[in-house]
Length: 65
Image 1 (tube, rainbow, N blue to C red):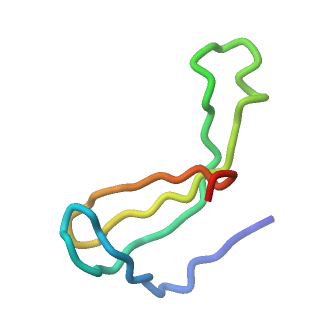
Image 2: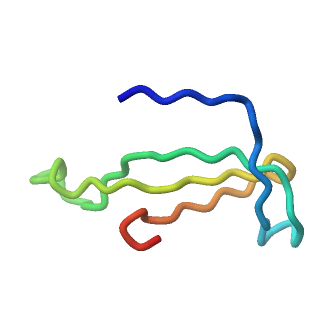
């Protein structure tokens, strides 16, 4: 499934800036296992948010959101 970015920034609270700032938000598949064996079975979706002011990045596992 393809996704598109319509160019709209989301405003979220940034823990580094201490205020609401524009953020770029994406969903990424990340491997949780440090072992190469069976790594393909340890991939999980994460919501990644990057502050457009200071560059701080937060990553939240979608299964825990």
